[in-house]
Image (spheres, rainbow, N blue to C red):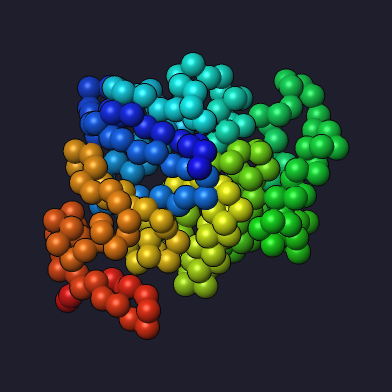
Length: 256
Protein backbone atom coordinates (compact mmCIF):
# COMPACT_ATOMS: atom_id res chain seq x y z
CA UNK A 1 0.00 0.00 0.00
CA UNK A 2 1.44 3.35 -1.09
CA UNK A 3 1.94 5.86 1.73
CA UNK A 4 0.32 9.14 0.71
CA UNK A 5 0.72 11.31 3.81
CA UNK A 6 3.15 10.87 6.69
CA UNK A 7 4.17 12.77 9.82
CA UNK A 8 7.39 11.92 11.63
CA UNK A 9 7.91 13.17 15.20
CA UNK A 10 5.84 16.19 14.20
CA UNK A 11 5.67 19.27 16.38
CA UNK A 12 2.94 21.73 15.46
CA UNK A 13 1.57 25.00 16.78
CA UNK A 14 2.05 28.74 16.47
CA UNK A 15 5.06 30.98 17.17
CA UNK A 16 5.65 30.87 20.90
CA UNK A 17 2.71 28.49 21.43
CA UNK A 18 3.32 24.81 20.77
CA UNK A 19 0.15 22.73 20.45
CA UNK A 20 1.36 19.17 19.85
CA UNK A 21 4.63 17.27 19.93
CA UNK A 22 6.05 13.98 18.72
CA UNK A 23 3.16 12.97 16.46
CA UNK A 24 3.67 10.01 14.16
CA UNK A 25 1.11 9.06 11.54
CA UNK A 26 1.13 7.30 8.20
CA UNK A 27 -1.81 7.26 5.84
CA UNK A 28 -1.94 4.97 2.84
CA UNK A 29 -4.10 4.78 -0.24
CA UNK A 30 -7.58 3.54 0.66
CA UNK A 31 -7.30 4.46 4.34
CA UNK A 32 -9.48 6.90 6.27
CA UNK A 33 -8.15 8.56 9.41
CA UNK A 34 -10.70 10.22 11.70
CA UNK A 35 -9.30 12.90 14.01
CA UNK A 36 -11.25 13.45 17.24
CA UNK A 37 -10.72 15.88 20.07
CA UNK A 38 -12.23 18.77 22.02
CA UNK A 39 -12.38 22.37 20.84
CA UNK A 40 -8.91 23.85 21.13
CA UNK A 41 -7.33 20.40 21.07
CA UNK A 42 -5.32 21.15 17.93
CA UNK A 43 -7.23 19.46 15.11
CA UNK A 44 -7.26 22.43 12.72
CA UNK A 45 -3.70 23.40 13.70
CA UNK A 46 -2.53 19.88 12.86
CA UNK A 47 -4.32 19.96 9.52
CA UNK A 48 -2.82 23.30 8.58
CA UNK A 49 0.63 21.90 9.41
CA UNK A 50 0.06 18.75 7.36
CA UNK A 51 -0.82 21.02 4.43
CA UNK A 52 2.19 23.30 4.87
CA UNK A 53 0.02 26.31 5.71
CA UNK A 54 1.80 26.41 9.06
CA UNK A 55 5.49 25.44 9.34
CA UNK A 56 6.29 22.35 11.38
CA UNK A 57 7.89 23.21 14.71
CA UNK A 58 9.72 19.88 14.80
CA UNK A 59 9.93 16.70 12.78
CA UNK A 60 8.68 16.45 9.22
CA UNK A 61 5.65 16.00 6.97
CA UNK A 62 6.01 13.92 3.81
CA UNK A 63 3.69 13.75 0.82
CA UNK A 64 4.16 10.62 -1.25
CA UNK A 65 7.58 10.22 0.38
CA UNK A 66 8.77 13.75 -0.38
CA UNK A 67 9.46 16.34 2.36
CA UNK A 68 6.65 18.89 2.35
CA UNK A 69 8.95 21.80 3.20
CA UNK A 70 10.95 21.25 0.00
CA UNK A 71 7.88 21.28 -2.26
CA UNK A 72 6.39 24.24 -4.13
CA UNK A 73 2.78 25.12 -3.29
CA UNK A 74 1.58 23.93 -6.67
CA UNK A 75 3.21 20.54 -6.13
CA UNK A 76 1.54 20.25 -2.71
CA UNK A 77 -1.86 21.13 -4.22
CA UNK A 78 -1.45 18.41 -6.83
CA UNK A 79 -0.95 15.82 -4.10
CA UNK A 80 -3.36 16.80 -1.33
CA UNK A 81 -6.75 18.51 -1.48
CA UNK A 82 -8.18 20.53 1.40
CA UNK A 83 -11.76 21.28 2.39
CA UNK A 84 -11.63 23.82 5.24
CA UNK A 85 -14.02 24.00 8.14
CA UNK A 86 -17.35 25.75 7.68
CA UNK A 87 -16.86 27.02 4.13
CA UNK A 88 -19.20 29.94 3.48
CA UNK A 89 -19.66 30.90 -0.16
CA UNK A 90 -19.04 34.62 -0.75
CA UNK A 91 -19.43 34.92 -4.52
CA UNK A 92 -22.15 33.80 -6.89
CA UNK A 93 -20.18 31.22 -8.84
CA UNK A 94 -21.94 28.19 -10.24
CA UNK A 95 -20.96 24.80 -8.87
CA UNK A 96 -19.19 24.02 -12.15
CA UNK A 97 -17.14 27.24 -11.90
CA UNK A 98 -16.31 26.63 -8.24
CA UNK A 99 -15.14 23.07 -8.95
CA UNK A 100 -13.07 24.25 -11.92
CA UNK A 101 -11.18 26.52 -9.51
CA UNK A 102 -9.67 23.35 -8.10
CA UNK A 103 -7.56 23.16 -11.26
CA UNK A 104 -5.56 26.27 -10.30
CA UNK A 105 -2.53 24.15 -9.42
CA UNK A 106 -2.43 22.82 -12.99
CA UNK A 107 -2.87 26.13 -14.83
CA UNK A 108 0.03 28.53 -15.40
CA UNK A 109 -0.23 32.13 -14.25
CA UNK A 110 -2.64 34.22 -16.39
CA UNK A 111 -3.64 31.16 -18.45
CA UNK A 112 -7.26 30.10 -18.83
CA UNK A 113 -8.37 26.55 -17.94
CA UNK A 114 -8.19 24.23 -20.93
CA UNK A 115 -10.25 21.28 -22.08
CA UNK A 116 -8.37 18.88 -19.80
CA UNK A 117 -9.14 21.09 -16.81
CA UNK A 118 -12.84 21.28 -17.68
CA UNK A 119 -12.92 17.51 -18.13
CA UNK A 120 -11.30 17.01 -14.70
CA UNK A 121 -13.87 19.32 -13.10
CA UNK A 122 -16.73 17.48 -14.81
CA UNK A 123 -15.41 14.09 -13.66
CA UNK A 124 -15.25 15.37 -10.07
CA UNK A 125 -18.81 16.67 -10.27
CA UNK A 126 -20.07 13.35 -11.59
CA UNK A 127 -18.03 11.38 -9.04
CA UNK A 128 -19.77 13.24 -6.20
CA UNK A 129 -23.17 12.73 -7.80
CA UNK A 130 -23.95 16.45 -8.01
CA UNK A 131 -24.39 16.79 -11.76
CA UNK A 132 -27.87 18.24 -11.27
CA UNK A 133 -26.32 21.06 -9.22
CA UNK A 134 -23.67 22.03 -11.79
CA UNK A 135 -25.45 25.19 -12.97
CA UNK A 136 -26.76 26.16 -9.54
CA UNK A 137 -25.17 29.12 -7.77
CA UNK A 138 -23.07 28.05 -4.79
CA UNK A 139 -24.53 30.73 -2.50
CA UNK A 140 -28.00 29.22 -3.01
CA UNK A 141 -27.08 25.65 -2.06
CA UNK A 142 -27.88 23.93 1.20
CA UNK A 143 -24.98 23.27 3.55
CA UNK A 144 -24.73 19.64 2.51
CA UNK A 145 -24.84 20.42 -1.20
CA UNK A 146 -22.17 23.09 -0.79
CA UNK A 147 -19.97 20.69 1.18
CA UNK A 148 -20.18 18.10 -1.59
CA UNK A 149 -19.28 20.81 -4.11
CA UNK A 150 -16.20 21.74 -2.09
CA UNK A 151 -15.13 18.09 -1.93
CA UNK A 152 -15.58 17.93 -5.71
CA UNK A 153 -13.34 20.98 -6.03
CA UNK A 154 -10.65 19.19 -3.98
CA UNK A 155 -11.01 16.12 -6.21
CA UNK A 156 -10.63 18.27 -9.32
CA UNK A 157 -7.13 19.17 -8.12
CA UNK A 158 -6.12 15.65 -9.05
CA UNK A 159 -4.85 14.99 -5.53
CA UNK A 160 -5.10 11.44 -4.18
CA UNK A 161 -5.03 12.54 -0.53
CA UNK A 162 -7.80 14.65 0.99
CA UNK A 163 -7.89 16.61 4.26
CA UNK A 164 -11.43 17.49 5.38
CA UNK A 165 -11.78 19.73 8.43
CA UNK A 166 -15.11 18.92 10.12
CA UNK A 167 -16.92 18.19 6.83
CA UNK A 168 -20.19 17.33 8.60
CA UNK A 169 -20.30 20.34 10.96
CA UNK A 170 -23.66 22.17 10.98
CA UNK A 171 -25.19 19.70 8.50
CA UNK A 172 -28.52 18.01 9.08
CA UNK A 173 -28.59 14.25 9.63
CA UNK A 174 -29.23 13.36 5.98
CA UNK A 175 -26.39 15.49 4.67
CA UNK A 176 -24.02 14.13 7.31
CA UNK A 177 -24.78 10.64 6.03
CA UNK A 178 -24.21 11.73 2.42
CA UNK A 179 -20.79 13.20 3.23
CA UNK A 180 -19.73 10.12 5.23
CA UNK A 181 -20.90 7.90 2.39
CA UNK A 182 -18.72 9.85 -0.04
CA UNK A 183 -15.71 9.53 2.28
CA UNK A 184 -16.15 5.74 2.27
CA UNK A 185 -16.59 5.66 -1.50
CA UNK A 186 -13.46 7.73 -2.09
CA UNK A 187 -11.43 5.42 0.15
CA UNK A 188 -12.74 2.42 -1.78
CA UNK A 189 -11.42 4.07 -4.95
CA UNK A 190 -7.94 4.40 -3.45
CA UNK A 191 -7.97 7.89 -2.00
CA UNK A 192 -6.34 8.57 1.37
CA UNK A 193 -8.69 10.65 3.51
CA UNK A 194 -8.21 12.51 6.79
CA UNK A 195 -11.27 14.09 8.38
CA UNK A 196 -12.11 15.59 11.74
CA UNK A 197 -15.41 15.50 13.58
CA UNK A 198 -16.99 16.10 16.98
CA UNK A 199 -19.05 12.91 16.72
CA UNK A 200 -17.06 9.81 17.75
CA UNK A 201 -19.72 7.58 16.24
CA UNK A 202 -18.80 8.79 12.75
CA UNK A 203 -15.44 7.07 13.08
CA UNK A 204 -17.20 3.70 13.35
CA UNK A 205 -19.13 4.50 10.18
CA UNK A 206 -16.34 5.80 7.94
CA UNK A 207 -12.84 5.42 9.37
CA UNK A 208 -10.24 2.68 9.35
CA UNK A 209 -8.18 4.42 12.04
CA UNK A 210 -8.71 7.09 14.69
CA UNK A 211 -6.38 9.73 16.11
CA UNK A 212 -7.57 11.07 19.44
CA UNK A 213 -6.15 14.51 20.22
CA UNK A 214 -6.28 16.60 23.36
CA UNK A 215 -4.39 19.59 24.67
CA UNK A 216 -0.74 18.66 24.27
CA UNK A 217 -1.11 16.39 21.26
CA UNK A 218 -2.04 12.79 20.52
CA UNK A 219 -3.57 10.65 23.27
CA UNK A 220 -4.41 7.51 21.30
CA UNK A 221 -4.16 6.22 17.74
CA UNK A 222 -5.42 2.97 16.28
CA UNK A 223 -8.50 1.14 15.04
CA UNK A 224 -11.83 2.70 16.05
CA UNK A 225 -12.73 -0.20 18.36
CA UNK A 226 -9.40 0.24 20.18
CA UNK A 227 -9.46 4.03 20.52
CA UNK A 228 -13.12 4.91 20.98
CA UNK A 229 -13.77 3.53 24.43
CA UNK A 230 -15.70 4.94 27.36
CA UNK A 231 -12.46 5.41 29.30
CA UNK A 232 -10.63 7.26 26.52
CA UNK A 233 -13.55 9.55 25.74
CA UNK A 234 -14.03 10.35 29.43
CA UNK A 235 -10.35 11.30 29.72
CA UNK A 236 -10.47 13.62 26.71
CA UNK A 237 -13.96 15.12 26.89
CA UNK A 238 -14.65 14.90 30.62
CA UNK A 239 -18.07 13.24 30.22
CA UNK A 240 -19.45 9.78 30.73
CA UNK A 241 -20.10 7.84 27.52
CA UNK A 242 -21.31 4.35 26.75
CA UNK A 243 -19.88 2.57 23.72
CA UNK A 244 -22.08 -0.34 22.75
CA UNK A 245 -22.80 -2.79 19.95
CA UNK A 246 -26.16 -2.30 18.25
CA UNK A 247 -27.34 -4.53 15.40
CA UNK A 248 -23.78 -5.37 14.36
CA UNK A 249 -22.52 -1.77 14.68
CA UNK A 250 -20.87 0.17 17.47
CA UNK A 251 -22.43 3.38 18.74
CA UNK A 252 -21.52 6.08 21.28
CA UNK A 253 -24.16 7.33 23.71
CA UNK A 254 -23.64 10.08 26.30
CA UNK A 255 -24.73 9.37 29.85
CA UNK A 256 -26.79 12.34 31.05
